Amino acid sequence: MYNSPQNSNGIYSKIIKRGMDFMVALIALIVLMPVMMILILLLLVTGHRKFFFVQQRVGYKEKLFYLIKFRSMTEAKDGNGNLLSDEIRLTAFGKWIRKTSLDELPQLFNVLKGDMSIIGPRPLLIQYLDLYSDEQRKRHWVRPGISGWAQVNGRNAISWNKKFELDVWYMNNINFLLDFKIIFMTIKKIFVSEGINQNGQATVESFNGSN
Image (cartoon, rainbow, N blue to C red):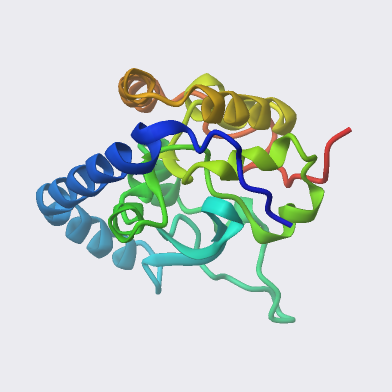
């Protein structure tokens, strides 16, 4: 069950941050729409029958919403109708858009709608909800983000426990200058392509609960 925070993170996270998110997302969508249309075309010609990946995730105050991304994997199945492994379904073009984080662009619509923020803890799968400790659940006290403090401090190369520790730290220290810093750190991470995958994994290992 969701328990509300005591301090509500101040005026910045409740009012100012939301207004800034809306304006940034709106401007970014207008500017980047031609890029998104080109990506859709390239996804179609590289074997992706569907170009959007839509999945329910856990958001602010543990409310569920539908996250939107560009697909990096095909829907290839075996003879029994089961999806093939992530490694097989991840196309060369899919790897590239993940490496450049271009697969995240449709989440600007989530930001515009209010489900997400530009900066915040990454929204995760519904099945993880029962696995969090009370401390880890605090990551839901702020809107989830396209990028966040954990993403610029290791992304998928660090453990789940470390990610959640960084998420909660962000929640406790959220402010304008920190968000501004994360945006610039995110741009740097994209250019150097750090921490995209865990070692030996095509994507990221599932969270199975804290030790």
